[in-house]
Length: 250
Image (cartoon, rainbow, N blue to C red; front, top):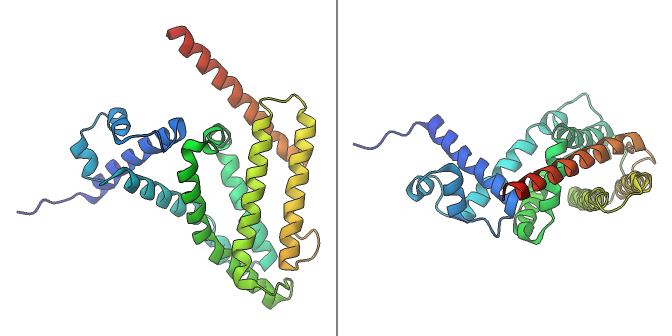
C-alpha cells in the first residue's frame, strides 16, 4: 500500500528546514553552510532531510522561491486596483517595499552585515535574478498604463521594468553601504544627508527614464532616514553585547 502523505505536515516540516537554512545562511553564509549544519540545528537525520530536499542547492532554490512568493503577495493588489493611476501604482509599489522593510527593520539591518559578504554572493545573485524575473513584468505593466494615461513618455516600455529595478538595486546597495558605514564613522548627520540625497537622485533618474513629470515620485527626508540609523545603532549594540557574552562564556 502506498504511503499517505499529510500535505500540511509535509509543508510544515519542509518550512522548518528552510527556516533553519535561512538562519544559517545569514549567520555564516551559503558557501560555508553545509547540510550537516542543518541536520545539527534541527537535530534530524540525513534521511529526514533528503525526504524533503535532494541537495543543498535544492534548499537554496526553495529559499529563493519563498522570498519571491512572499514579496509578490502585497504588490499584486496595488497593480490590480483600477482606481489607481500609473504614478499612484508606481509610488505604491515603492511604498509597499519600504513598508515591508520597516516592519522588519532590526532584522534587515542585522542581516545586511552578512548579506553583502563573499559567502553570500551566490545567494545574493540568485535572489536578485529572481526579483528581476518577478517584478520587471509588474513594473512594465504599470509603465504601459502610464503611457496610455499620457504621464509617461518612454520609448522603451518593454525594457523599463528591468531598468527601474536596476536603479532600485543600485540605490539599495548604496543605502546599505552608507548605513553600515555608521559603525565606523561618527558623522551621523552627514551620512543621513547623503542617504536622503542618494534616494532623491535615484528617484529623479527613474522619473527621467519614464519621462514622468518632475517630482512625481516621493523623496525620503532626514527623519525617515533616522529611523534606520537608530535601528542600526541598536543592532550594533546588541551585536557587541552578544560577542562580549560569548567571550565571557568561552
